Amino acid sequence: MQIKHILREKGREVIGILGDATLSEAARLLARRRIGALVVRDAQGGLAGILSERDVVRAVAEESVAALARPVSAYMTRDVATCGETDSIDDLMEMMTQGRFRHVPVLDRDERLVGIVSIGDVVKSRIAETVREAATLREYISASG
Image 1: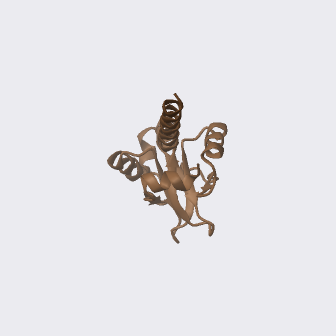
Image 2: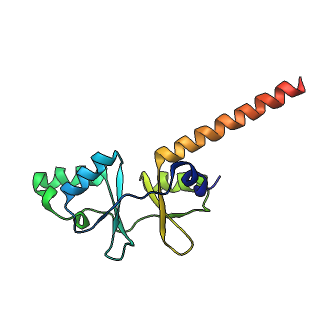
Image 3: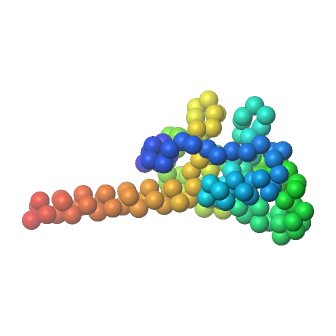
């Protein structure tokens, strides 16, 4: 199964923020949208980085409430791991496990941002696939007997 199948189910909306927004604004957006990461966009709308809930927690732990007034760009991950729509879910799972991150932006062939996939999306997809396979096997066994 490919990443595009996950995007077909969940949608392609990407919640983003500019790098000069404050960490406080980012935290409010994460909470309001009930998501775990924001794509940080540059002035042209391209991918500049990613900011996760973990990044917010680390910033506050290191700098206390003063971090909330600083820009997102001070805490975002700049070297963002991405995937393509035609990449396999198995490869994505391995990348997420090895890199120890839970959100991966999805780029199209022209390197444009077309979605974001979380580990929750991957798990949901794998469970659905396993349920479908089990149902197919039950049908096959029932038809054989």
